[in-house]
Amino acid sequence: MLSGYGVGLLVGSLGGGLLSDHVPCAKLTLILLFGCGIVLVLLGLSTNLYVLAGLLVLGGVFDGAIRTLHQRLIMEYCDVMERPRAQALNRVAANLGMAVAGVMGGALAQIDFRWLFFVSAAVMFSGLLWFAYSILHRAVEVPCVPDDFNKTSQKPYRDRSFLWLLAASVLLGLAFEPIYSMLGNYLIDYYHLGADFIGWQFALNAGLIVVLQIPISHWTERWGARRQILTGSLLLAVGLSMLPFGSHPFYVFISTALWTLGEILFLPTLSVLVMQFAQSGKSGHYFGLFSVCWSASAVFGPALGVQIYGLFGGHSIWVVTATLAMCSMPFIYQATRFEPEPL
Image 1 (spheres, one colour):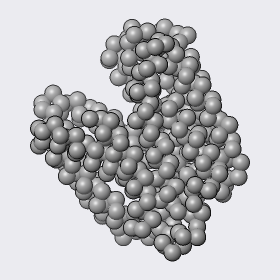
Image 2 (tube, helix red, strand yellow):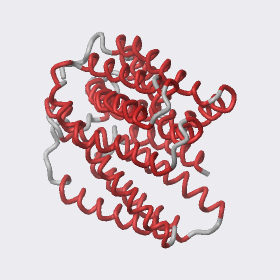
Image 3 (cartoon, helix red, strand yellow):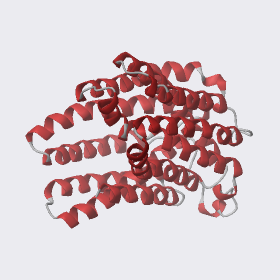
Image 4 (tube, helix red, strand yellow):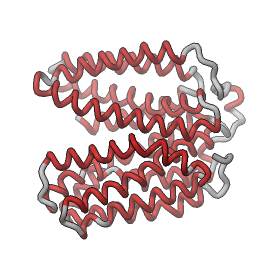
C-alpha cells in the first residue's frame, strides 16, 4: 500500500514539474491542494482495501506534484538574493509543522484513526485558503517561461552539470533516508534504548534545525553552493559512521548533532542550486527530475536498507550510508564547477 503511495509520489514529482511549464504555478498548486484535501477525507471514510490503495496512489501523485511546485513557487516569488534565506525559513517551517503534527497525530490516533485524516483535511483546506489569500495577488519575481520559449531553452537532459547534481542527490538521498527507516530499530537492537529515547533523539534533530537553520544559513551565505554541500555531506558521513563505535546515549546525541548540521548545510543549498539551474530553461523539467531523484530514495532506500541490515547486521548500514555520502562529493564538485550564478 505504501509502495503505491511511493510510486504516485514519483509520478507526481515529474508530472507536476512538466505541468508547471504550461500552467501558472499558484493556480496549479491550489487545484492540487484541494485534491489532497478531498483524498484525505475519502481515506477517512473508505474501508475498501482496493479503494484505499487507489487513494494512496492518487494522494502520492498530488503530494509529489505539490512538493515540486513548492520549490518553483519559492523561485518565482523570491528575489535571487533572498532564495537561500527563503529555503532556510522553509526548512524551519517544515520542521515546526512536523513537530506539531507528531503530537497532534499521536493524540488523535488514541481517539480514532479516522480523525487523523479528517483533521489533516481540515488543515489542508485551511492552508489552501491562506495560500490563495497570500499569493494570488502578489507580483511574480521570476514568471513562468512561455511555452514558445521552452522549445529553444536549455533542457535538463543536456545540462551536464545538472545531471551531475542529480547523481549526487540520488547518493545523498540514499545515505540520508536510513536515518528515518533504520535508525530507530538500530538503536533498539544495538544501543538497547527505548522508543521514548528515540523520540527525544528525533526531537533533538527538529529542535536543532529550528534554532540553527537560519543563523547557519546567514553565516554560510558567502561560502558558495559547493562548499556548503560538500561540508554538509562530510558531516553527514561522520555523524553516521561513528554510530557503530559507541554504546552510550550521549554518543547518539553527538552523532545526531553532527548529521543534523550536515542536513542544515546541504538540503536547502541543493534546492537553491536547482533553482539556479532551472532559470536556464524548462524550469518544470528541472524541478520535476530533481524531485524524482530525491523521492526515489524514499521508495528504494527502505527496501535496500532492510536487506543490508538483515544480511550484514545493523553496523553495516552506517558504513554503507557514510560511503554513499562520501561518494556523492565528486559529483557535487562536478555539478558546481560552473555555478549558474553566485549565491
